[in-house]
Image (cartoon, rainbow, N blue to C red; front, side, top):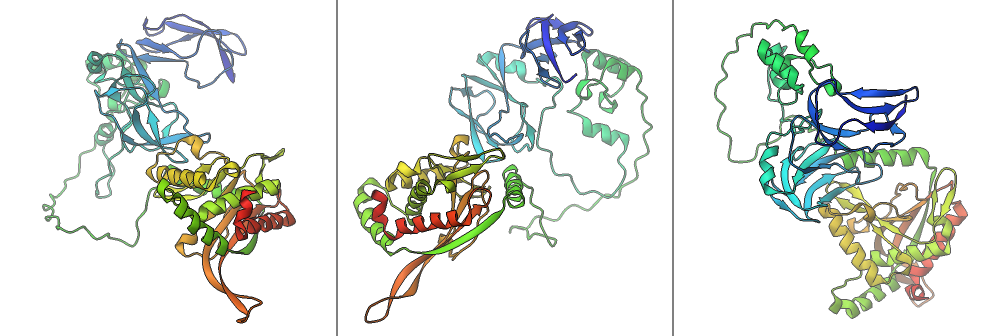
Length: 491
């Protein structure tokens, strides 16, 4: 059996279910089978309607709770990017009991792409936070919190625990201790707060004086059942070794402590992990080659100075990068092969130019997109880049603002880099690496025999499966024409 069909629900939402009750009839590839529950509970929510076909194994079909609760909504961790499988709850923007309005920022979630604000979809009150701040690698679909309609219902969820799901918290750093084998009692204590059992199992454990934390559960998701309690044999506790009391710690110095040791291990964020995976994939699967040219930027610098005087009253300041984005977009129209994507079975030639601009953030590199850069003016491109870069550094980019793109630009010229080679951002076919401008002497037919010009070096990385060498050279020739005579970008 790989999939099943929900033939009929035998219980309704809100019904009390006793251990062994028939919950639903499920049609497998062999027969229609009754699906029973192993513990007492209430049916809180049916997630898969009757008649739904091809439900995969492991799919969540309903939600059960140990008590009957007021009407509420569970907020699950959604997929905030196409490749996201887990997320990290960076910060809760609302507190327990706080009123929520539609569109309010509820939490900040770190995905594999960026840190994204997660907004409330319905009005209500925040009754329960189930995943604490800083919790890493939370799987998709995990309940994050509970929202209720009435403020008076908040108290009902004070001790709520999701059936089969532990309340996720950030584990505290382990205190330093001598190497020793922990006793069974210590192991049991470590398990407290994350052990789940049926009501009947809890009752039997209380009658027999058994600590449920010491029992290994064999039910769904490791839940402790009646059978586990009945067959449980308490482990023998080894005598604890004597420990000499340590002297009280010295008073902490007023200045910051100097790091000890020869290195520091920094945890890998979801964003950094995905950057690493994608860069490795790009270098290992894409046949890169690189083409470099020098561009005379004198006319761009003169025009930029003149245009900035014109738009000063509009609070717009054009940068050299704005001209580079515009010239790149127009060059992609001239040489559409460079504005293409390798999709394994086809090469997709894009008819619009959406330029991804590499932005460095504290969490890693991200590439927000200037959409339709080929039809936007320099002022429009400047406003887009400024807004996107600010949002990227604040972690407020929405998924549609950085997913996609047809051509990428990475500019390190502001850091004094003369030239470099960038790694292609798949499935795109090209990325332009931009270095800084510098004054150079150029041969000239004048009295001195030379001119001084501001020259900029650029390197185009190409996917040889999509863009041949001559095509890449043609793109660079068009790019240089636009920048050395920027007035032609108006044609």
